[in-house]
Length: 112
Image: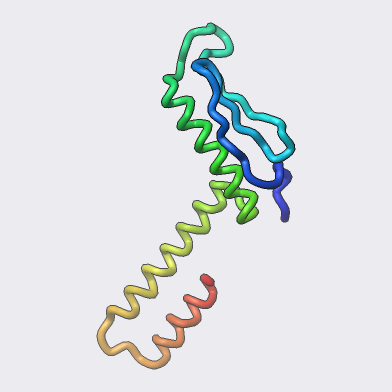
């Protein structure tokens, strides 16, 4: 299923001391402010604001490239690691049979 997000590269544009923009491909923006929306007090450092903006831009661009949300990528990564560890364990065992080798290859092919 295709994600219903702005298509293309999301770009961290910088900003001033109070807010930073992420520019989407359609030229709309996502803004991050340092100030609390309720109290008006500064709750983020400039560096924290930049880090959040870079994360959002990278997550949006990556989601467009792979059509997975970051949380879905994490699940996929965890499953790949689990399968790879199982393959590694099987390969490290001495005296594995031809059937064991076939199972390893099948596991790898399922993962791919």
